[in-house]
Length: 248
Image (cartoon, rainbow, N blue to C red; front, side, top):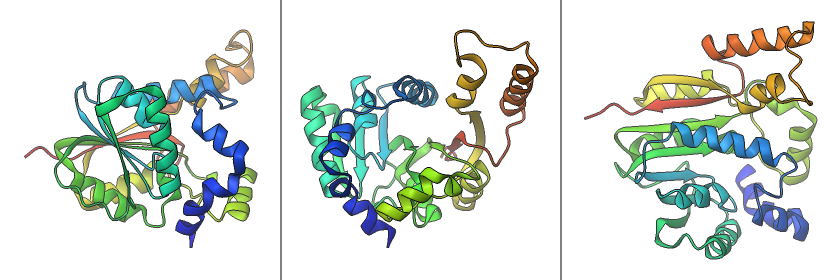
């Protein structure tokens, strides 16, 4: 049911939506925050030239970022028209042989021991079966390879934006907290779980307004929350999660 929503998504968002998708992240209203977020993910990736699997890449902007930095990248998406758009963006940015795109379902990938790193950037929460997707990524990674997820935590599915997206486009907008990702990862063999705070939490404390108001009561509360998330991260919050496939 929801996969049809993914297949129809680009057509349903219309010309303006297609134009927005083509020019991400610079077309985003929160472009600065999006750049901070992808930068955080890239800081956790292995050194180039590593081979990267970019899951649910959509219009391909994350894949293009990775390839532009010198990674060898395969960008995967379920929707043929999204991959067509990604190929158009690839030609525009001239990343050449560093990047290939693949039309497939990330819940039924056929790779085995091929990649150093796999990335789910805001896409695993659209899955019908996140366990199947994580299991296929485990198979796709080389021994010692890592999976990085950047996903929303508990409460995402009940936000007004998520409810509207599910109603209009028929896509999944699921909660995808670290507890679920780690449990599904450990079930198939991943270990060495690490959790990192999201950039929007850092922004809330340090970058809102002209100056961080850390010495107000609300500022101290936000700072304490950030410290707690950094050193004792919750398994329910939105977070970046890193899991490692054991070395051979």
